[in-house]
Amino acid sequence: MTKRLPALALVAVMFAWASAFVVIRGLGPHVSPIAMAEGRLLVGAAVLGVIWGMNALYNGGAHLPRGRTLALTVGYGALWFALYTVLVNAAEQHLDAGTTALLVNIAPIIVAVLAGAFLHEGFPPLLVVGIAISFAGAAVIAFTGDGRRDGAGVALAAAAALLYGISVVAQKLVLRTVDPLTATALGAGVGATVLLPWAPRLFDELAAAPIGSTVGVIYLGLVPTALAFLLWAYALAHTSAGVAASSSYAVPALSILLSWIFLSETPTAWGLLGGALCLVGVAVARIRFSSSGRRPGIGSTATAARPEASARPTATPAGASC
Image: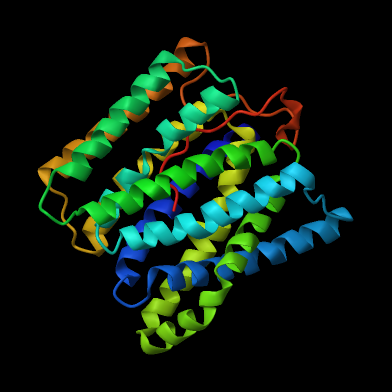
């Protein structure tokens, strides 16, 4: 059962992040992008901070990053938790939930390039093919359809994917010496601090919005932020890059399904085709595990609680987080 925990964590993360795209879309008419991001991070950072503090007391102290590791933590906290979240919120002012999730999936290309350039990772052929197929599916969704998409939304989602890709590489480096809980709690705290000047606007907008908007913001902080990012950091530290990458491609398909059910955003034929291509890419990316003698979908895990047991970091080609 222990060996399955990282895979189960990834499943929970995918559902949580997919639901976030739908909730963000629903909150858009009532809460502005920056205020929504700050509310989400305030809740998430508070929950994670309490869990981190209790864990530190139980274990007799906390291991805090220093020097370069601290700088990387602050960096991905500002870029990923704060600015990325704002950009996704803004993109969904222009795009439907499923389309935004699909566009953010250009992140694996960015991570793969960064990993190849700076972390000396190879490019397994089937993984590259799988990413290419899924990216093609995202392109089909983004640039065809019923006119609900525009250039501003595409640009915002693409910029979010760029920040996501950079931040995943930074977080993986941090996870060499910092446990997932600390890495996640500090990142969320940095993000909430960066957006703190917009806290008054958040409270003003929530006061004027339906009560459901407040519930939605709290949900974003509790589930897709506190729970999902913590589980993601755990899985990132204990799961191979290919498994994390392939599982991430389930987010757009789930987002399309959930937005269809809860927002009545009916997928077009092109949307269904693009989603199918994304899932095909998942299957192709996972074939490489079978060919190397491993069970499909089960990657190598770290031998210790932290990934510093590895000789070098491995960047995860991330998909659509939210």
